[in-house]
Each structure stands twice: as structure tokens, then as C-alpha cells.
Image (cartoon, rainbow, N blue to C red; front, side):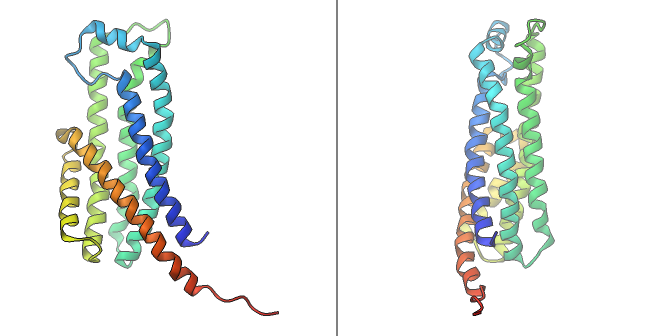
Length: 227
């Protein structure tokens, strides 16, 4: 597979991953408990609702697919940054950063929806206080995973800044997104939205890099040898 095609596929993998992750979080929210002030009766009714249980059952596989595609995108992004920086070792932090984000996100969502899965069993009696604690733990873990996203944003921005590949305003906006992500739980939903929007820009950047690579690949291709 030529480099241009590989980057293009990685870029589209990133685009699909954004959609899948948003869908997965929305499905998990239907059954998760992230508000400790919710009444005991509402929590029990939420966990025993068949529709919400089904949403949780669909949400986790969707999340897993989104994470897999995000890691694929991260390899393409690192390839672009390697080219921009001339092989700067800092670019190698991209994939581990994406893996940290992905791992903590899966863990957090699993904690949040675990009680709903257990509620499928007739042998499980939900304790509202335990569900509250698991829900808050899941929220903290998932939002803390944004630290990995902050690493991805910061490394990408630094390399792009050194290569003069971004406008000044885009550089400072990206650094602001990195700070939000690194604040993890304390930034709440703002960091999640900011990271998702930054990811859209990163996907566009990788797809544009793939288009620029195509002509170069054509120029270096050897003509067929006459027989």
C-alpha cells in the first residue's frame, strides 16, 4: 500500500472514530448514573429499564470499535508528524497518548454501565449508593483519560508550530485545548467537546497530508521497463 493511501485510510478512520465515540458515550449516558443527587427510585428504575440496558449493550461494542479506529488514526498522525519534524522522537508519544485516552475511556464507561449489565440478572439487587459511587468513579476515570488526549494535542501542536504548518491563532487555540485536556476531570464537559473539535481539525490535516503525498509518490514512481 502506498503512503498516500495509508494516510487517507488513517484519516477516515479518525473521522469515523469521532462519530462512534460520541454515539457510544451518548448510549452509555442513557443508563449511567453521573448525578449523585438522583433519587434512589430513579436510579433503580433507570437500571431496570430494558431499553436503557439494551443501549448499554450496544454502546460498549460501539466504543470498542471507535477506540480501535482512533488508534489507527493515531498511527497515521504520527507518520505525518514524523515527516514534518524530520524524525523528532517526541512524535512517538502520539500513539501512547491515544492509547491512554482510549484505555481510561473504556474503563470509565464500563464502570458507569456495569450495574446495568448486572441488572439483567435476576440475582442482582441494585444498591443505589453503590451505583452512585460506580457512576462517579466512571466519570472521573473517563475524564482523567483526557490527559492522554492532551498529550496528543500538545505534541502535534508543538511539531506543527516548529514546522510553521499552523497559523498562529490555531497554535494558541490548540495549546488551550491541551491545557483543558490536561486538567482532566476538573474541566468537565468543556475538555471533551474541545478535544472532539480538535480531532476534527486533526483528521482534516491528515487527509490534506495524504493528498499532498499522492503527487510526490507519482513523481518518484519508476516508469515501466520495456521488454
